[in-house]
Image 1 (cartoon, rainbow, N blue to C red):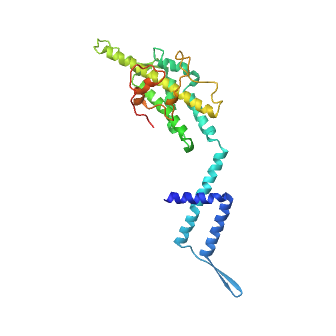
Image 2: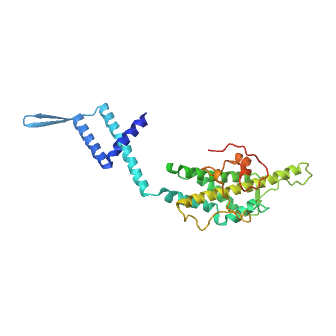
Image 3: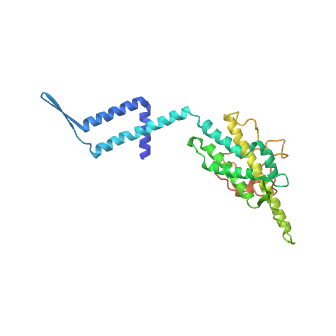
Length: 293
């Protein structure tokens, strides 16, 4: 109720314009003080002016007059600032450039190949650290209400990379000083009657990593193309991202029905629905899941 009244008053006074509102407000305050605080008595040969004090009700009335006007002036000032500043160009473009630099898009086709489709998982330690830094940056970056859809899309990218790191961490191990690889957890020194099951689990684990990289490629291309709809020159030298020696004939991207502000559904759901994607490494899964909003 309170907000509705204030919004009505703001809309009402906004019709007059900022200058008229200020002049009218000062006139009202001056008149209010004159008739409530200052007492003027005209006597023969002199005018007597007596200054009194304001009662609580007088102060309350002044606050009621001042509050909606101060909100209106503040909103007007913010609108002027926003009109003079392209927030997307000054905030979101630099943020996205930094995000894609941490994603190492100039070498994306190669490093994504070595972690998804090379037959031997190999990832630079620095690349792993940059992806972890990327996730933390996305969580801490400034957001603006008028760009809520962009914020959700960027947050979705952060969620995907965080889940990718989570899956890696299940079996990742050092490979020399500069690289990580994946432990072949099906191998044992002694005979293991569960060998075939573990071997299949190892394959499925690697396929899941590959499918997450495919999803990362799709989501990155979606963001790049959406930015280029507004700013055609954004990272234009990179073009679309792709995975080397993998589906080189077509761009890895979402189908029309899969596009939303949160196309990646979260790890649990993705494990089930990844086979519905156009490109996939996985061999098993179901199509039933609950998408994140």
